[in-house]
Image (cartoon, rainbow, N blue to C red; front, side, top):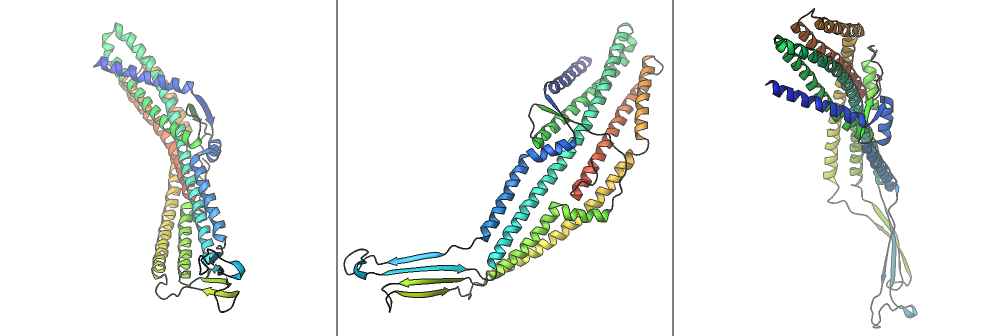
Length: 423
């Protein structure tokens, strides 16, 4: 059993070393969140693709403004009693031509332009929503990667101290077999920390991969977030003001509003289709009328006897009601999200406020003191191991609370749709 544990310990240690070597060989990119956000906005391929969609929809507004092309039609005699094709000699033969133009009634052209504008607003809102979600992911990934790097430093410190203890107890075990229990217990403790280190490295690799995609950096680069010290200072937040700000900024809420506007414009357009368009034209006939060289005026429109676009009008009416309900639901979700994110932000700040930094420093000094006491045999193994586990758990929870504060800030900014609290 001891051999298996030793083999597994060596394998894990080798993996940790290989991860460290891999990071050392890669290009390290030190970047703060402001720089990361700027790089993200300039390079992210998803944002670039959505920008093209916005430009494409803007081109459709120009298309909707264009008038319908006039229609030109002609008729020539093909074969007549002279037994000749296209015989127009000496003023003979029929020549007929008509030039016509369709005129859209009931404001159809203006409504089509408005529908094209609605589509552009929706595409722009989708671009803003994509940017909001990607920026949120960027902020979370950035904060979590920084927390994992701090966690890795803690594990490296614990592994270094644990390795020294294992080496010392191993020497003692060679001359005093009663130390076997202490030797195995310390190796198990070291194994636990190294296992946590490997799991931490796995999470770091996953976040590195995602950040490289968001920032479009080189695949062999290693991104090292540079974060400023966390300030545990609460900020006055007016919920009513934040709700109003979110309704003005949040692209998903604006999308729901734009969809309602689009449905109302579509209803107006469907009603306009019930009014027939008018076609006006002039025609010329050289030899097939009561008078040679005849000129005539043409006016035509469909008679709305059967199809008055009833079905489409009814469908558009129900669609407006559907979009009104969706907007109300979206508004409720927005308000609840703002209230919840403000409460979570205050809770996270409160957890880290007070004498957090002082407690953190005191705990580190206590660990060093107990480590020295154990080495000098002032305390026993059981007491030391209990405190070691407690120290590791407490320090991890402190780092977790720091990340939770960053997440609360990210959630608040995400739900408002703008930067309320800087990360």
